[in-house]
Length: 193
Ligand code: GLN
Image (tube, rainbow, N blue to C red; front, side, top):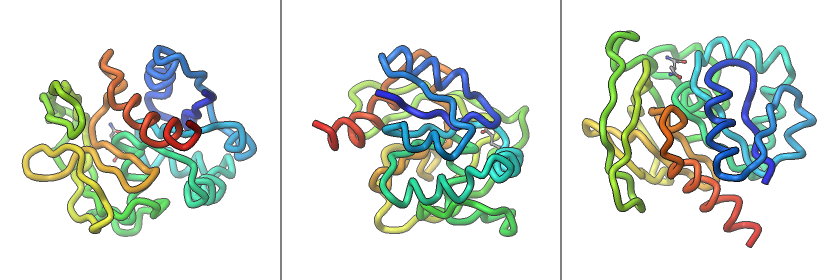
């Protein structure tokens, strides 16, 4: 399948590599028209403020919001989660796409030096997953329709709301492809099979 990777800033190549390893074709999304050619989209980690500026510059902001609202499956990691959220708790002026009914606190675990790795129990997976948290957001509030697929320290770190998935950690930084696979299998594959 053709799976988009939002390619304005962040760890774009790592996601593309994970998708290729799963036998999909990554499409580097920099123009709104490209959104019509993909079955799903991954939004990488990076810096959500920089990504916002660039998405607006490339006319991707409104187009992406519309595509997601029309059912395009999307998976946001870390900064991608921030962008999908309804509101940034500690930077209330920061614009977000408001398609995922959660409120996040940016950089909530501390600075770069406080980044960490840990094993997570994921709903639907037999074995634990080793996860990297890099200046990650914490999901502080969420609506009833948001399914919690993994938690760490008492707050959700992997969530799903319909076709929208988001994690505060980075599965693309390991060779473990189970989260990408779960996202694609439970959204695109189920719809097309
Ligand atoms: N701290 C970044 C932000 O809030 C996210 C970091 C990341 O994606 N690894 O945008």
